Image 1 (cartoon, rainbow, N blue to C red):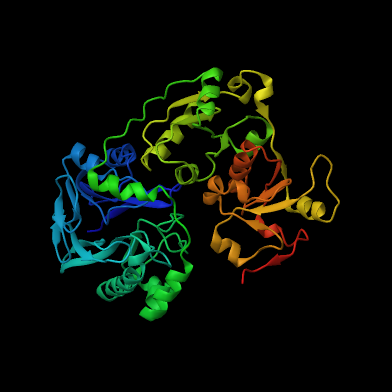
Image 2 (image 1 turned 60 degrees about the vertical axis):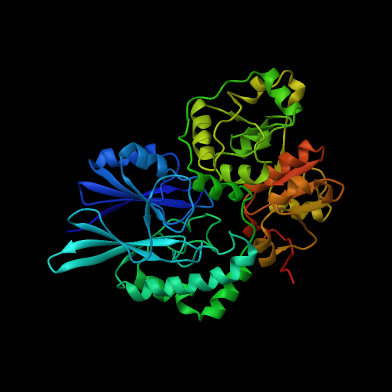
Length: 466
């Protein structure tokens, strides 16, 4: 007998959920809040969901586990040590859960990412008994890395890093080399200490590649803590929501706003977010809006930048883009946008004077501007602003650049020196977000819409942070 394990990826947040079945019944691990994707997959495979598992109370998204269990009648497995405000099936290290005659779960305590983190070994029946086919590791053992250990506060980061090392070693000692590793984090999530180094993995591969299984405990702790960068501010609300029991989502269409209402909302200090690609935003946009294109991790950056609870209005080319944004936002607890508008930018302005352009260039143009050879149609480069994260800056940055990480920019606009600002990131996405914030503050700005890897070849001097 074998189990079929299907991945439900949420690439915008860098997470994976799983549906594993024997062809008749299924378990679901760490579901995102928009559970219709899981329900559709189970229906497509003709399986009945009997168990919903949480590896931990998530910090980077609102879980759909409680609602999925309610709708399906499934057992909802949550760590007994976690204090929650809803009924659940409490599980702890050493427990075994019978799923069917052919599938069994073994609960393994793997603290590190959180204090009460659990992993679940999936056993399949064989002629000789049971065989471990893989392990759902949540934020414990990831592909080439581990879950970060500072999300419960810096005061716990060192202790949790030590526990993370012990937990990973326990899994490696407990399971055969051929057992699959199925993590929740590591695909772009800020819950991961670093990024996944492969699309799939086994215990044997992790023994060869993963620092947590190659380094001594003290060395792993030192390396892990040194590599941690900032994480999204909205994480502070996720664990609380998951412990309280998230409400069902409402993905019905949002109220439409006309041009006059959009102007009123911006005047009131609300956020009006343009979801179009940054090149469309640059060509023409409504003054006062913020560029957060759906082609990038829109929800992560929006949730990080806003003051929590501020009304948000969405602008997009099509109603489907608004619906896609709604789905991304409910995953981080932004349940209902205040309003929405679709079409082209001209429809969102009460008069043509409200429309703005945003100038874009590449690193070659920036290099020329720094040497006094300003390309036609572009202003001089008085200030080079780097809005990448601190670890990126330390790895190498343009000589003479000013560093303000994008998450800090809303409260540090006054720290950007006077003059025309050329702003860059690693690709152009975050730079466009930053440029829209700077332009809204009255600054003259140029977006460097280019890969940072091109900067040195373009003639710009790079230095590493001391």
